[in-house]
Length: 268
Image (cartoon, rainbow, N blue to C red):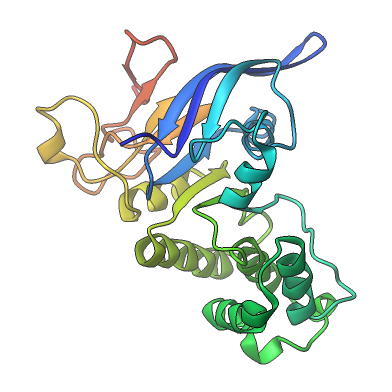
């Protein structure tokens, strides 16, 4: 099966600054993928290139069998996105925010209201549908942004640091929505985070396959497979031993430095 996201030798430069340096990866349909790295590593830049907001300096991309540089409109129909910075209209109600987005994506008028109500119920905001967004908490706004990203039935959901600034309880609740969405809708989820424990949660619970040495696969149950070009980590799975957490010195964690012949242990 052809990957739903395929990236080859993707690079973005700003004059002398290399924001993204020659990364390549592919994502299978229905998987949850976490892009893990410190602030400034190029995570948001990568998402912007994948979602047609930024042109790469070099390299190629395929999103749902379309080229973001040549088939921009088709690519944009394929995905929903929750940006790192809030992007809702605080002077509109929850319903009005979703309605505006539905109109922009040409959701048919006869099904528009039904779809909005369905999503508001999904993110548990139906009872607040007529309230102005400026009265919402940070967690409520994030949930509404997820609903907005799903309004046009996309096949891929991009989440750029979706839990940034949220309290632990709200963060866990948000991940529950994402994991339920992946399981129920078989939606591909591509997220960025710099929280190691979140990456661990995603790859341990989410719909991700084990990779790595065949003789290890039977002993692992989640964890991270990382690409690390210039500080940017691509998290897949290679598995962790027993119940070890990311960050523990006894964890079987590996990283893939982007040279095909090298795969090293992340923790000594």
